[in-house]
Picture 1 (cartoon, rainbow, N blue to C red):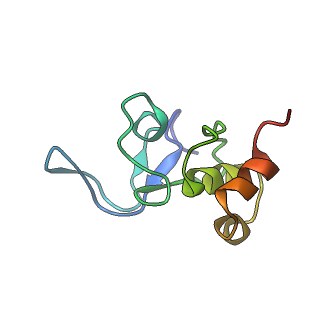
Picture 2 (picture 1 turned 120 degrees about the horizontal axis):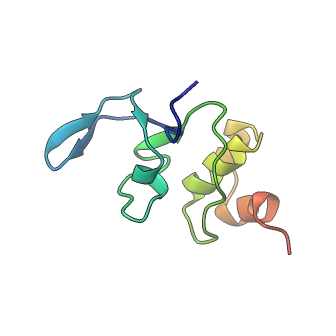
Length: 96
């Protein structure tokens, strides 16, 4: 089980201020992805750790962020990757 708050795993080498901060596979704290000063993007930089429960992204968040959220809620990874952002928001977003 990942330490508290480490809900993501790096998918590529990530530099911070010119220095290597994360190697592929390293755990990444959620603040680096979803916090107020977040600089990393789901899909491009990180992916959710298996079993991580993610908070719903903003409705205007990227398709990759919504796909990651859908997977954390039990959706098939390939199916979620093939859905549009609008489809993911309709299927997994807050219901009126």
